[in-house]
Length: 396
Image 1 (tube, one colour):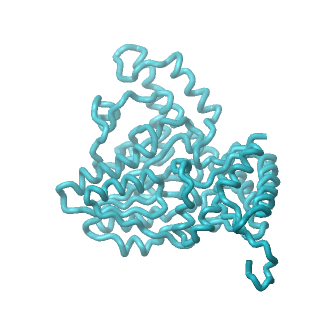
Image 2 (cartoon, helix red, strand yellow):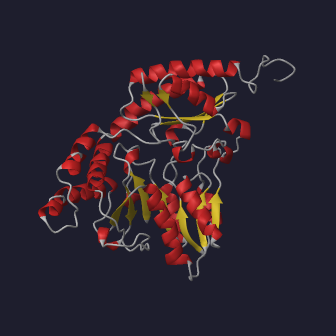
Image 3 (cartoon, helix red, strand yellow):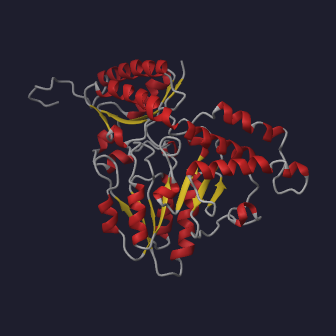
């Protein structure tokens, strides 16, 4: 049995999405900007896909949704675009983000620091969430941008986006959110949250890889980073990925249609797995369930290295992770666990499990059996787990 429990890294393309995309590879493959019929034949599908995006996010008709290659591109565009528009040769020089953002945000901000921009990385509480008061204390009249993720990619914790956006606006700053881990798991309404800019990526909600987008609220200007043709109204040059856009639109429509299922059945299976994990001694799950997206568990298993656990799971056909796939080639301790105050040893024991609407009860039952047995096996050979009884005077 092969079981995929790494859906925060990427998701399976929904078969309905794939079926809709397929003709645009071998039949309707024209360039949308071409004047002949091969080009114009793609226009109805593109219009429908963009309508699906606007409807799915409740964007206004005068807002922009610009198609990009992924959320990493979108976030880089926002952070660096704000530098050109509001910081370079202007009277603002400050950006605020958090200590637990995706590397796309963190590394973009570090790049701007090398250019002299002042960046504040807000701390998180013991559940891994930024508190509203910390933003109030950090923001000032020099702040150009506040960028906070909607939901954390490792813990699944949901951030108070509406309240944080309001504080940014009260202080004359733009507000951007990386909504990659929220879309398809909880409702994402750009008007209700009053965000100025929002990054998203199709492959996180059962769409294709290589396509994402940036929502831009009416009146918000972001300097283009990719110059060339007049694609996407001149905001982002590059030939449109027709199949990808069609797939992304359909994937978002389906994700919203399955939202009740996500919040009932996916949550039930997640909770069943989580209950089995925390019934084992010295297993910690980060964050209260009710404050997390319904599919995610970040567990710290005392005495078990995260990479060792992944090895055992992988041998049994189960895919999980130790955190963000974008940073998984390094063997550093989990930065989110460090941010919430866990020591280095505990932060090395993090394992993330993330379900999808395609996860079955049979798969979860098998994962519970394999994971609990792996914990026992690895603790039996661990040099960092207690060998003596808890009552022993050695305290080992």
